[in-house]
Amino acid sequence: MIPAPSGASRRVGAARARLVAVLLTLACGALGVIASTQTWFTVDLTGAAAHSLSVPGSTAVPILAPLSLAVLALGAALSIAGTVLRFVFGAIEVVIAAALIVTTWPVAFTHPVGAVARVVTTATGITGDASVAKLIAQNVATPWPYVTAVLWLVLVATGVFVLATARRWRSTGRRYRTDATGRQPSAGPLDAVESWDDLSRGEDPTDSGR
Image 1 (spheres, rainbow, N blue to C red):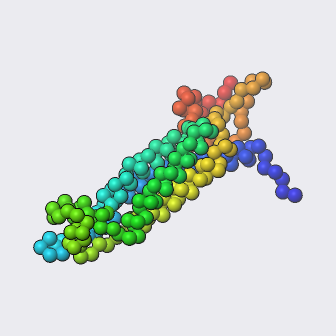
Image 2 (cartoon, rainbow, N blue to C red):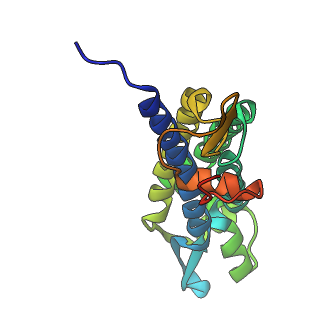
Image 3 (tube, rainbow, N blue to C red):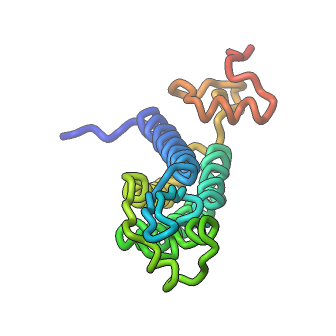
């Protein structure tokens, strides 16, 4: 028979689940912010206006930068959230990821004129998608739209992971718990998130107690 996991093993597993969820959320948010500053399309114009224009992610998908910053904030909040807020933040994370998929995937895989129209209009003064389309000889995507599209799938999976595991996360990062017999250490080492929890409460996570 395979022995059931001990209490210490479950606690370590819960701590790792929270750490994975927080780090993945922060990574997705950070990469989203970076992607918003990178060139997504190179547009070649025709006629008298013939030259090349670079279109950044923040222009192709205007909500990319603000929602990526919101994901970063969610990652930070998840590191200290209680059980109820974990479910709330996990649900918000899934909703944000879905919104980013809906807006990013069409841009990445169909290259609509609207994604580059603002840059072309700024350079030429021509407005309207139909008029702008006539000026475009070629619209070439860089890898960034595709990388970002996949990134939001990871974010959806992370949000679902948060919802699936949030109840098992430790509700406190304290290394020691007080009971009728006095101050006793909990099993297992502190992880980075738990240390941050202690510091946010004004406690010293390195204090071994009395």
